[in-house]
Length: 358
Image (cartoon, rainbow, N blue to C red):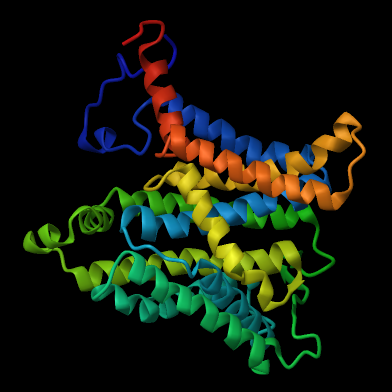
């Protein structure tokens, strides 16, 4: 009886088009943001922030970017890891070339470089789609792995072949580098993810998002009603690559600190693809749910033998990790192919009529 829209009347078009029409949703989001921005930095230790929350937020942003392209625009991509590498290496070069510039601005600017590259590799989508488009984006993945691994200019000719994040400050707070605190890095990542998620939700509710969904559902019919496939598909690739590129730069600058190009291999692309499949294609909340599933379940499986006191070596735990995670993915796809977001949607509909069955 608490969660329902009965009695919540709208007196203007603006109120009727609100992002969260039910007041309980607005209060719930406010509480979640309050906990995320205030409570968690105060009570969470370094392990929770560095090993769980920061990678969860970064992968959520990457999954959101891929969901814009695959879930909403219907363009299958297997090159997400490569576009993350473009963002990471672009940010690294910008930071070394312009050491006095705000690093957060450079992180956002690296997304623009990734967007331009995404447009270039999105050109084949004008002639091919489905499996053939996936192969084209897979070729982009392998190309970027080769490029950033062989051309020394991208990693400043470091003997190890890795990029190492320098120390940078924003408003006298150390944001990147080995001396940056986990609380500051968490706040930076959380702020960027919240702002970009809000922008994505509003884009999807507007003309651009509806054009993407029209192309996804039936591209020929969409073209007949005046939607331009060239502009719509390339914009989808640009927006997706922008989000993914920022996620890649955050992955290096706020999480790993230093890494080689092998971090952004094909396994990274498949992991992010699994996130949106498990979370739900065509759902913003599904990107976060899928990222939470992929990030948290392996941690739970790894630590469960220690909690239960079962003597087992790390290699066996790693094998069990792959087996159990793969089995859970199959189970979810069998019983709820629309992902965790659909389960959450059904729960919300049940709550709106509770205690009545329908």
